[in-house]
Length: 250
Image 1: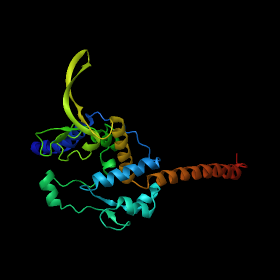
Image 2 (image 1 turned 180 degrees about the horizontal axis):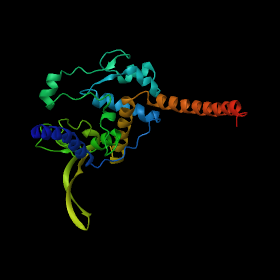
Image 3 (image 1 turned 60 degrees about the horizontal axis):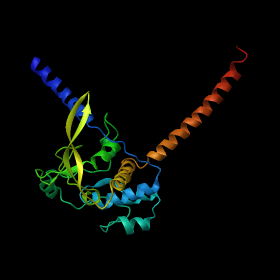
């Protein structure tokens, strides 16, 4: 009986430890705006060009991008490169077996990653924003890349040409009255973009991924506000009717 209790306690403790471990990561705030249509359009372009080669978005259709102010013609001519129809799902042709051999595991579907990565440490958007900016060169890894937000990740840094190449360097910081040496990513070879430009591009990409995780979020919130407004009016009317019915009693 004691053995069973220990096993149950361990089963309950493991998820908590994993969750706590994720909370130890300091996440940067993602400067996104779900109402910024140009940002969402730029993010969709980055997603299709850099992410959709390996990662699928099996619960998202190309024609939903019309919500971002794009016409069906613009979507087909600028964002569809595989010959599929605009109404088709964002699937990829990569064989899962090949993906496992190349990366150690098939790349996950990214449709709802902006929601699934949310934790006590920050939102899923914050996690993605930090993750895409903390890759660094690591010769010990099969892909030649590693990440401080997701250590030993199997994914290479697909945006390295834009950001440049970072390496781990020691940086002295003072904490609790003591000076400590911490290893942090530092730029070694600049990319096509400046740091500010790259951060803005990542914010656009994350902005789109947040939208993709729930395309109906804006309409859902709008409907919720309308419902609350209608209920508020009905409460006032109900109170007025109640007073009218009970005026002779009181």
